[in-house]
Length: 221
Image (cartoon, rainbow, N blue to C red; front, side):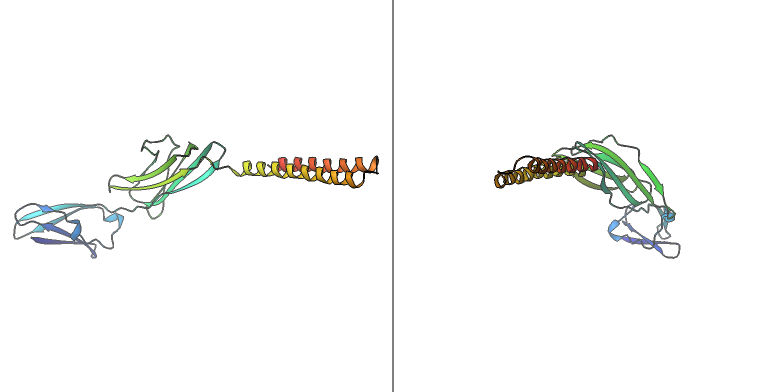
C-alpha cells in the first residue's frame, strides 16, 4: 500500500490510496483537505516515478446549508410558505414535496449569487390546510451529491389573526349585551315605582353604547 501526496497553492493537500497491484483509488478516510476555495475545483494528477504510473482525481469543493421555511400569508383555508437557503456552491436546485415525496407546483425559484460566489435560493408555494399536511422544502446539488431537507406541518386548526379578532369581538359584544340586560333588570326591579323618561333613557343609552362598540370592533377587523 502506497501513499501519494499532491500539493497545490502551497497549502492544500490531497492524499490518495494506492493498492500495490492495482489502480489508484480514492480513500475518503485518508483524505486531508484544508484551506480550500471554490476556485480549487478541478483535476489533479499524482505521479509515481518508481512504478511509472499516474492517477488523476477530480476535486469538487462545495458549500451547503439547511433551508428555512416561514409562513408569510395565512387565511382560513390556505397558507403561503416561503423557503430560503443561503450559502450554497455550486448553484443548487430547490423543490417542494408533499408527505409522499411528490413534487408540488410552486412559484419560480429566485436565485441570487453573492459577492462571495455563494448562492441563495428561495421559492414560495401555496398549500391547503390539513391535519396531515406535511410540506418538505428540499435543496439539492447533484454535482457534490448533497441534499438538505426542512419539513413543516401545516395545521388545519390554525386561525389567522382576523378570525381571532372577529371571534373575540363577538364574545365581547354578547357579554356587553348581557351586562346591559342585567343592569336594566336590576334598575327596573329597584326603581319599579319610577316610570317614563328615566327608564327609557337608561335603556337607550345602554343599547346605543353596545351598537357603537360593535361598529368600532368590526370596523377595525
